Picture 1 (cartoon, helix red, strand yellow):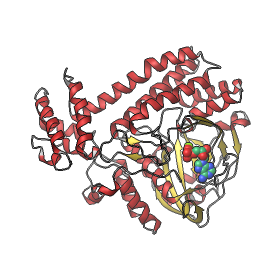
Picture 2 (cartoon, rainbow, N blue to C red):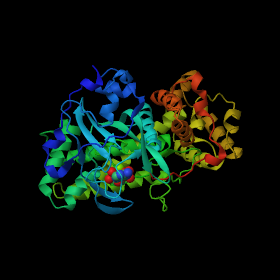
Picture 3 (cartoon, rainbow, N blue to C red):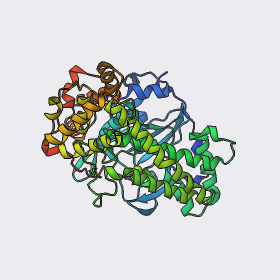
Picture 4 (cartoon, rainbow, N blue to C red):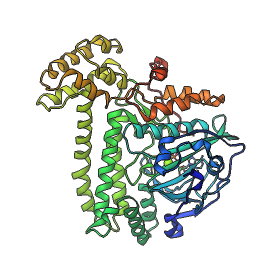
Length: 479
Ligand code: AMP
Ligand code: MG
């Protein structure tokens, strides 16, 4: 089936009108398709050659509607950098409706009731970042919103300088955020909290429908899903950058890609967001931030669920889930199948050595996946060799306790240690080319985004080392 023949439904509009505002998109001028995601098309069950659908560009530009589509922006609030921010809402995202379990949303499609001082637009630079990262996180096995297509335009948008406007058509099984509950708690409309909880159970946790203590169990699942996602972020070296509660999805997925970054060299105190002067959302603080955000959610839900019960669940579920998941992934990344009593030291020393050695986190694990006793390929990519050398000695003797063959270990490790990571320096290069009208690198990055563990000999240039001057930079929030 063609994408343009899809028929949408709009279950969110069955909620009270205070949950949303109906709004028409404001199309960009001279829109054109930059890239489409075959893999995301599969989610919708439509022909993967989206480019051949001549109506695609007008649908994404908001000048043509899919059957059944009624466009609206969602209302929510949230805690931003620790402070309650009042009413926020979709200031530049416009929802089209739902099909195949996916809610379709245009990001950058113009002003809404919730735009405040914003212009309702998204620039090409940030749209490329969101488009590619959504697909890349999925490729890495991390729960995330997805991106179906990216369009560019001639529309000028003012940021630090003039840039061109773009729109990403993004998909998610839910766009409800922690902040959506916080909004209806802040207004004191507690019956609306309950209708939202019923909606969330229908949409994201249907197995809880009609179950005893369903709301408390919903909270437990949100805690668990969030812990699993954060464990994956920490293991792959992903720094989200703006973990406000309005950017926390109720199903635990990664959403709202802004000034995110992957670690270049392993630095656990890395802060990717330029405006985060206190480092609240720094890499090492992501688990604690998620925990704090889950507390805010519990407060918002407290008119309908006993707070102490939620607090107990948060204590019982969050840390243990996160630690178990993180440790399992890190064991797999090291190629260790069996647990040994000294492994805590081995792991602690690993992170310390990586930090001291000044070594690229992703490249380290990819090279470790080929380790055969020769330490030079690893030592050659770090600055302070002695730290890593000591750890590799420990690792080498630890490997003797493992049962599997070297070949088998390499094979397993290559499936969990990605070769292709969309680091900022490579994204920046793709953006600069795209701003000159050359979108080839965007599409090359999309190819590796789907399969980050595979080898693409023709796309080797995408793994070139990060120049010293571009390592672990901070990014501006303006997007
Ligand atoms: P973010 O930090 O991108 O998650 O955005 C926080 C809030 O600001 C959300 O309510 C966004 O919809 C809104 N917002 C961000 N950028 C814009 C913009 N250019 N125009 C209107 N609203 C915006
Ligand atoms: Mg946001």
